[in-house]
Length: 225
Image 1 (cartoon, rainbow, N blue to C red):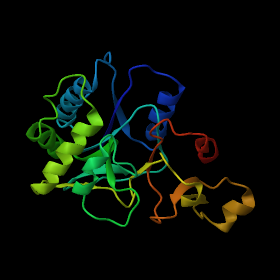
Image 2: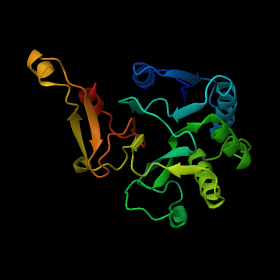
Image 3: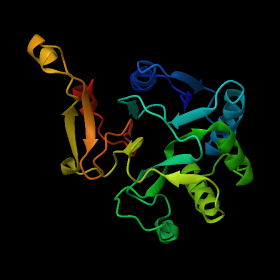
Image 4: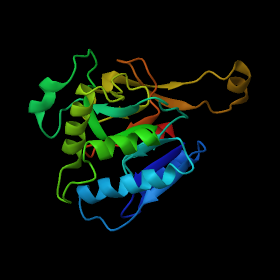
C-alpha cells in the first residue's frame, strides 16, 4: 500500500504528516507541483494513482498539512472508503441525498480516502473528476461523484464508524478520550511509556488517521506523540 498526499509548501506541519505515516512503515508519495486549483489537483492525483498502480494494489490519500497517522491500518480490498465529517460542506442541501445513519460523521470529506488503486482510477474517470476546470471546489465535485456512484452501485462507501478516518472539525471534547494500549505489567513497572491514542467514544473506535480539517486546533497531537 502507498500513501499519497499533496504538499505545495513544505513546513513543520507537512513534515509531521509525512513522518507520522513513515514511522509506521508506509511509503509516502508527494505531489508537489505548483498549485493552480483543485481541478489540477484531481488530475495530478489520478496520474499519481496510475503510476502507483504499476507497483501497488492499494492506496490511501490524505491531506498534507493537517493530518496525523496514529496507528497502523488497512484499507478495503473491494471498495473505496471515504472519510466522513459532521457538516455537509459546501452545499448542505445535498444532505438529503445521503443514506440514513446514526453516526454524527455521515457526510463525505475529500481529505481522506483509500482502497484499491484500480477502483479509484475507474471512479475518477467514470464520474469525470479528471475533467473539471482548475477553479472547482474539489470537495463538492467528489461529493457529487460519490452520491451518483452510490446510486449506481459502484463499490464505494463512507467511513461512518470512523474506523480508519477521523475528521476533527466541530468536535465536542466529550466525544473523544486519550487511551493507552495495555502492553503488560512488566512494562508499566519498568517505566516504559505506553502508546497513546485518540479514541472516538461515540463510535467506540480508535481511528488510524486524524484529519484536523477546517483549521481545527491540532494541539492534542503534542500529547499523542
